[in-house]
Image 1 (cartoon, helix red, strand yellow):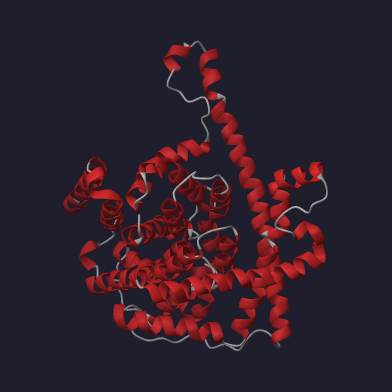
Image 2: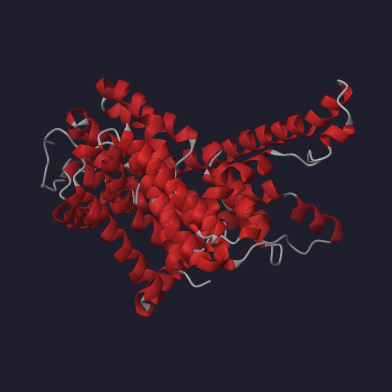
Length: 461
């Protein structure tokens, strides 16, 4: 207990020092303090700090830093990643052809020139436009990745990444393969790569699977978020950085105390492709994409409705207090425009500060972090897209670092998604999954903040 208190006091002192010395240390100094704070925060809650394999931690952090430096500081690598981002945008455009054939002008990113009144209606009806512009690419991307899986290309990429991390970090093959697969696949699809091993995984391995799912996004969602207007370099970079980051943070929080079955080996689940041929793979991927697109649209409708309801409740608190006899003078400092976004901004502003965000933007970024955690990253990205349309609403640095922090599935609904998805592969481990769910969410969320803080050290002000 004493070491927990010691670490907690140390990182609190570092965070407070960074705040009071912010004009001296600058934005990069804030990010350095953030890296130490976020790492220390996970250490404070470690289940067994004495059992931590520091070889894994050191190599994991080193890999994360090397990847960040290569992309953000080496001009050639940055140019390559930027080019890949351009290719991804072009790739998204291919789905427009199909969407425009089916939906006509409704699938145009901009309203057609059909007269002033109708044009204004199209511009103001954002959700109507979103359904026909942002959701169709999910179908195409899902079909494309299913085709890659059918031909075994996805598995080869995953195996290559896993071999590097197993050899350097000393983790088990099964957990590392699943973590590597998260670069391309979702939090319930990636564990399918190691499906036979899931029932026999140690708690530490199972926890690593869950943390990685929270800290990553799937390849399909990567494309979707770039389509929302997120910085392609930030999204692509943080997805790769999340591999070693989620691994070593998971091992810091819940160290390995048993001997994993696949320690030091890399073997993918070698079952035959479930699809008859390429056409069957495309059709199946399209069906899965349709389910996902409908789910995304439905979740946004419901969660935005709940946000509106909570905003109305929060706005009604002040009038209710006055009607109960409290004087208006006593509520002079109570904001008239109290909303969920404002509450999130207050709660998560310290995290935004430690990422390296300017003081003028920390409450705005804090509200996005809170929206991502409590609702989902779709809602947060769409909020950020609206802000980008307003000149100088936030600095470019703030937008970039926010993209790093938002790129992950770490939200409360993901606990249920993992419980259902991974639990179906190993019903006997459902109890372990339920116990580890909230902890995995915590570590996965911190992993995205740590990625953003490291980027904050390297990105120009």
